[in-house]
Image (cartoon, rainbow, N blue to C red; front, side):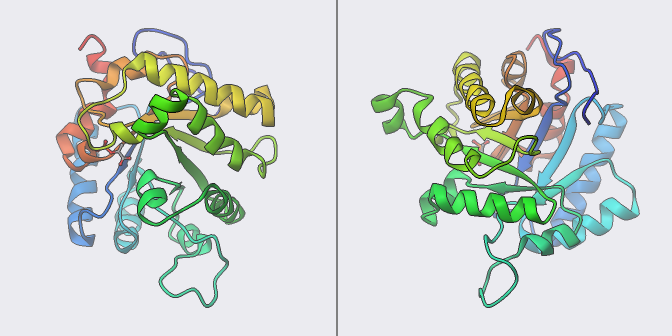
Length: 274
Ligand code: PEP
């Protein structure tokens, strides 16, 4: 991906960061449904002559779907990549119910989502756990997609950037320069609420996150790292986010479960003016 130069929605030069549109299915679609979905998505994008080198497309199905998605993608040589929604921080061993990073790598996962707000809130994942999971993912050759974001209360008390930057810094401490990772800025108040951040709000936080990466890992790593926005992204608001210089894609929840809707988000360059 590095070295590919694209022109993004709105005509701003984007340098070497290839935009990534990622669908987080959460606990939706079983393994049979996943096969039908990925097949239809690939057809839809192929029909529309989507350039996968210009905008990368990833899906994050439940664990039980991954083998089916791997088999389909590899048999049909589909240009869609995939990953898991979580990973254990532990190496294989006596950890009932957990999934090791090595197992995901064996299924040819490219990415793994780490620290989604639903994991932080519903499963008590701390910054320390998120950092340990990131280290485990990198050790197995996976690209961690690290989620950060503030609650409505955080926003009111600390402003938009403070909490996401602190959450990211907690992970950056343990990463060497040049690490390949993705950050998703997902304000908790925007997830599943239908109330997305404005593109300007997303840009402001994305820029602060990039500055934090630069401070800890150097400018080169900061320039190469993709920062996504997530939170009520739809086909009719994606273009505004993609026009922002520090927003390099989207993590999409609800709208990623509809093939045509997700396909339209991936093809945001076709409806920049929307
Ligand atoms: C998410 O869960 O990561 C997300 C962004 O959800 P939604 O798009 O539904 O707000």
